Length: 402
Image 1 (cartoon, one colour):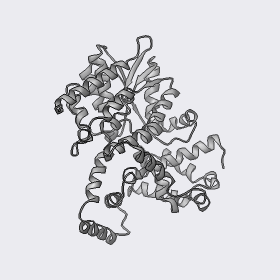
Image 2 (cartoon, rainbow, N blue to C red):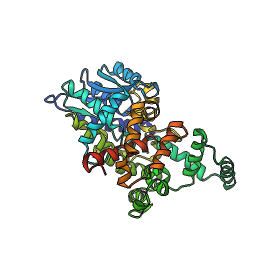
Image 3 (cartoon, rainbow, N blue to C red):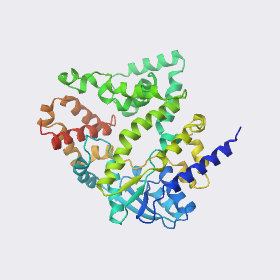
Image 4 (cartoon, rainbow, N blue to C red):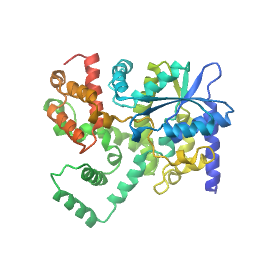
């Protein structure tokens, strides 16, 4: 039986061989996305060191909001690998300016706000004459890096806790009914999710319309759809996973839903808008198959995400990057929708407009309630509100005002 060290060494060799195989030819100017996370940093590091490529061009986007800015990790990777680093700090106003371009670049309603910094990063590369960028998408889903995997494990512990403990927790929360506080709401959300089976427990955030079926959707719209439809999509994919491991089944679901339906669409189309072609070494079929045969216990070991991957990358990635909290190109939309008047104005002018009302999908009182709760900070509805915004703007742009 191979030791853990031997398995990690074999994985490192597999990763290195795959990444180097994706290195574009010198006929086309190329570089990499670099968020400062483990995936993009490992790709840049392998290309720089093992590929004997001096000064690999990397492109990064940071933010004025300190809790979202990752450029300090970009600096660590740049120093370690002697990269040709190009960095941009974007503002909320720049984010607003990009939204109309996204409507032109996507032929469907697309509400992943990460398309905004992705586009700005790709445009920065194109301005530097680059034609091809390598991206780290897929690493979370094949190596076990999604924070949701760790949360799912903790939620599973709660689900299997003694019944008396769960009943007491529920009774205490009922006694606090009516209090609308962010920390208390997080406890309520944990208890609610902890009572659900998978895949609902893992993907409940992507079934927003099902969860708010009665309050969010108009009666006429509810008559056309079934409440369980969005959940049935993920249930079907989850059931198709050829594994007895819950983690592997969730990772398979993530590849089918998060990667195929969201992340690749986001990165590919946003980059194409800027004139950039993207390649994805960590979505190489042979690497995905290889990683899929590794034990789930070596991907999430206890509460340690990416356990085997980080051992494999120990001699490549700086320690601070291996230990950093995942952020990627996520932008501070929650803050912008709460504090930037121009964002708040666009949100209200669009979602509470007459055209949105006439369209007949959503109860505007419910949308207004989401905005108010987000503004007060009792819950973070930035993902849902941005999706609703992009859906209505897409309709206005392609279908009409109502």
